Image (cartoon, rainbow, N blue to C red):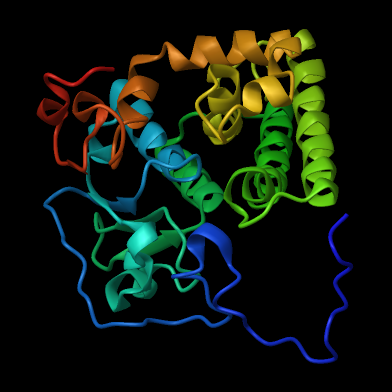
Length: 282
């Protein structure tokens, strides 16, 4: 058993004990350097990285284009969060919380910034009248959208951090967040046993929000051997749903936008048009 930690009377930041991201994590906000963001020519400018949160925005934009909304054309630029690029003044000007993704809508007379992945999905859905049902089904989609937004920290910052990224593995935090992650998968599995999609019979922003977090567990490509550790295969309805969404052409494209790891053919560090996907493995 590790020694019991006794919290000090006043907490101070220990930059040497932050695990994998100790070089960038600080208890303060704001820009750390003056750095402008690149800008393309399309109505939307996306600044992101292909993490589970990051690809929510690129999947949504690709789905809008797939559905014929030409006004959703966008330029995407990689923000390397491992190198602290989210703390440049240009990015902080769009997202004062310094998290990806961040979106700039330059289609009007004045730019509109949108930050936080759920806000981006909702903003685009309302702007284009797409992937958000009407009537009672809208409330259901809202509920599952915010379920995911509220749950993601337990999966990523909770289970993912202590299982894969913390400097040492300790039983209590891993067990605590493994239990919560499995509970969340069970919540989704029970819903998807009775419904094709989270929000009902239609594919909505609720699915676009949840898919990037849950599918990598189903596919076994996140947090080391988390798929086996958490017995993810037992959630058969989540598996059906994840595979169904993964097969969508727009989702295949959106998942590689601002991706900087893996096989070179699966990476797209910048996206400016549909032609950028030519020759890529989707």
